Length: 127
Image 1 (cartoon, rainbow, N blue to C red):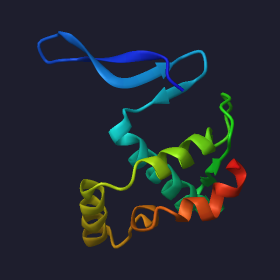
Image 2: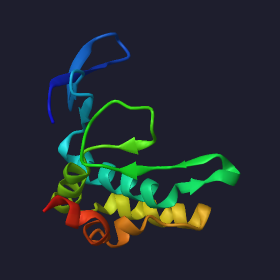
Image 3: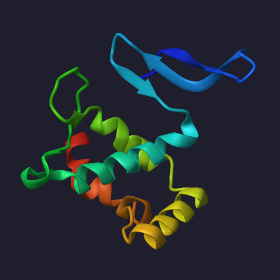
């Protein structure tokens, strides 16, 4: 992961560096450290929630430990996501957002409530 720094354009037109990185050649984007665990848990949720439903024309999102550009619905670098999940625990903001989503939509992200679920489901692929 890594690459060149992503620049943010302010309302006055000035550009400032962010903590995010992009590597166009390797098709990768690395969020700043405070967001890594959140990104991982969002993707884990999407992978189990969007498990393919032909009646809704919904593909099955698959997590893989590779990073190639393809037209199939999959997200790469599974082991990096597992590492981010383990290294960056859910924040209070993330927990509050999960509670609020439950109030509004009636569903939760179980990977925020129990981050170790990701290891139970996919961790064996990253040994």
